[in-house]
Image 1: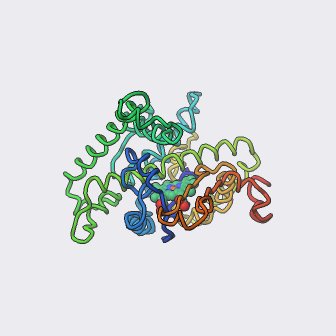
Image 2: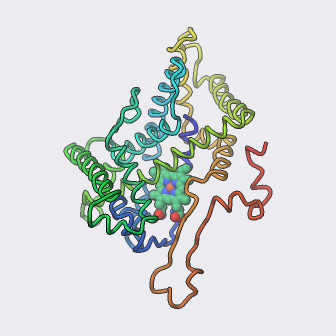
Image 3: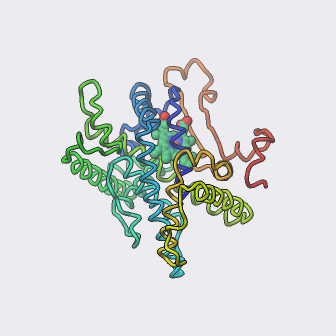
Length: 363
Ligand code: HEM
């Protein structure tokens, strides 16, 4: 629970920094991913990118969104805790990565579209949208390794026939959700999700179109779902490999808990006195209330553990930045491609200073 809050919080900080560097995705990237990313932030350049970046930076650094997202992540974390405790009681085996991806999907969908998608219900249902989302992402990415994808698309065969269907399931679902949300009285709803906020923006006297909203919000979902879900999976894996680190982390969290009981912010006297399910759920819920953005800032050991996980298993290990077309002729071709191979760089001790390397898992 704490982990999920912290991973998502770090990402929030990253976006809130307001960096103004122009990145080039390029035409090849745009065409390959258009079916899924549309004209969202990951798939556009120049002014379109700048505009979305400005919008994202502004929104992600607003306290309103932070407060709202804290509540959403806490709520879904509690559902995840409940699923885990039930599984533990019944000795049911769970796939943690699947669970984390359900968690990130549900929480980011709620923060972006303001809608409850439900993959994290106790019975862990298969939701067609979530499956189609994952499939579309996978096939669109594999186009880079498939020289025949355009031909397959024209003939509507193989993976291109599949992606045509899955992308439709994604779009139909998103547009249905937006239609339902549009029917609400958003002006006075008091909702703080991004859909509502963007809808009320009225940039230059014009409302954002449904297509712009679809692209903008879906890109946040794409950005946050796998990156955070997979980092959490690696994190849990690292903890199982390093029980002494897990113990230290537990102590940091226990200290946070103890401090608050001592300061009177959380009274253990009011808790059900039995050690049964009620006690456990109440206890977890009380503890989750301590995990505010400010409290997370002070959990330095947790922070170090997440950074170390990202260093060893960076979930976005490669960023490709082709140059603008008109500069190609005047400069050497390869100098313009910045292949940022984080995996290699982060594991390569020659590049990093000793201080940086002395992080959680090294003791
Ligand atoms: C462990 C979690 C995450 C990691 C490791 C991660 C990593 C990255 C990386 C490496 C980039 C590319 C930066 C570049 O091109 O220079 C990026 C971009 C981006 N990330 Fe994340 N991210 C994470 C979570 C999130 C979350 C939760 C969100 C929001 C819901 C998010 C939203 C974005 C957006 C919108 C961009 C595009 C920024 C731009 O083009 O200006 N990320 N992320």
